[in-house]
Image 1: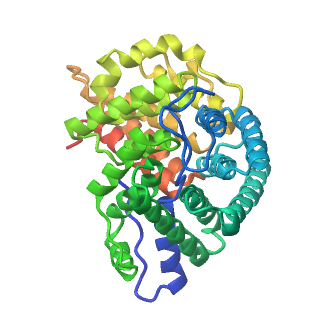
Image 2 (image 1 turned 135 degrees about the vertical axis):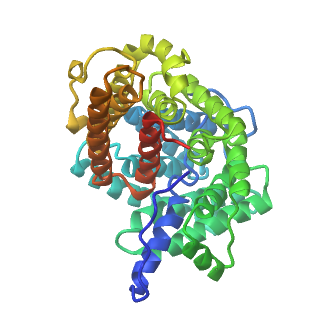
Length: 432
């Protein structure tokens, strides 16, 4: 993933500022570390045996929890999560529910999937409580036999990663310590049981994120005897995406971010990931939005003439809209389909309250449409084309300012800044 250039601290910057910057990038590694997912439909038994110490019924309930998390059906995820927790307490099973329900809240906090600040504060409080209880249970070594400790370690490593992301603003040093602890635990799980593929996602994100980070962070990593390799990170993410139990979808989402859209075989790999996500979650517009945005910014011929985008227009009304998150992405997809129409932007009513940190997107699409029109051959209309290009540049700058000022977290904003930047270049016909 291309990340927008970071401002470098001057020679007299405070130590805490450097630690904060290092922690912020490092902790992106743990954004949804051990985030849960399943390619199975709700309640379907997994093909591989459960992890040590887990029952088949526990795993079936977990499949339902993680399915609804990625379907953005928050109430259903909570309902099955409570059932899972009751089963774990009754049968003294590993506290997988604590990790799943913590991950659901962190997913929503980090991606802005909440309707109000009050709801966000509630999610933070609940995530902290769930994480604390999960770690307490994982640390109760007196009742955990050696044969099942690896499952408790997997859960604890994931929870520590999530907890670190919540601490980054108020205590970057503590967040950094928790993040590195979680990473070491996951690496120990891999060393002990390399067949537990879910453990590979955390190290995979570590390698991919820091391989793309500024050189100053590479020097900081050496203080911890750490290195980073993009190739290694991608291989780890592929393992968790294709062979993991609970990290499949989120690993695919990170592969989308780190795989280049400009190399044929990697672009084909991404296309396969997009297709699989939309097959698994057909009524969640988020996954359609991701692919359409990718096509528009990097593969406009596919967006306008490839057939996939136009065919998807028939299904727009089938997207679920029963909560804030689902309504937002359904509205964004409506805007993307407007790019394929001949109607003016006035045919859509955009709600900034719903789009919120994506409020930049309509201006970006208008800019792309104008810039494409300005680059089309039109004999005898040079002045008109110049005016269209100038207006397109104005909308492009407006979109860039709105995105920069949005409440998106640093990593997510960098991802969409990359898309806007290259999308505008492609529309101008100046992309190298």
